[in-house]
Image 1 (cartoon, rainbow, N blue to C red):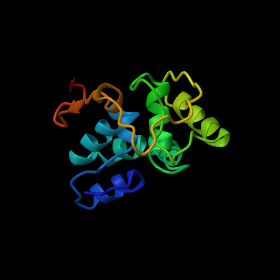
Image 2 (image 1 turned 45 degrees about the vertical axis):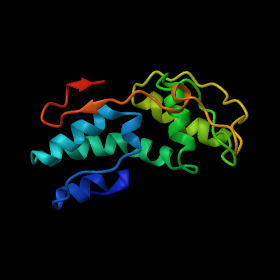
Image 3 (image 1 turned 180 degrees about the horizontal axis):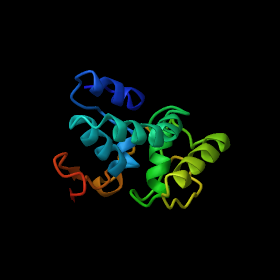
Image 4 (image 1 turned 180 degrees about the vertical axis):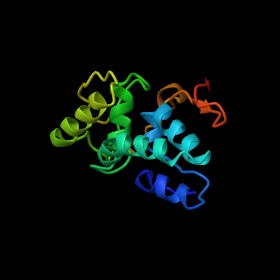
Length: 148
């Protein structure tokens, strides 16, 4: 498995089995479809999806992980807040512009908002409800099906 969204297509095309993906938190359907296409030998469709996801791959790593992905997930309503634990800070203005452009380009309806300053210092522990997003699992044999 690869741990880099940028290398998923070439890795799998050479016999790799999959990826540990940041992008799939934001665009799971496209990522699953790309993985399924490559797994079934449809490199043309896999390549199209790889190109579609490339700007988002760049945006997800425009600043330290998890800042961009957590911001995107909050903007998409997948998690309640983009608040980060110190020493992480909110996404920069240039990162926000890039991320918003990428999400819009993918047809995702993001509602950009400012992240609050962190209240989660070294001794504060968030509740489980605020610490975890819902998990969505995909069956690669049927890319259209998702379960929660």
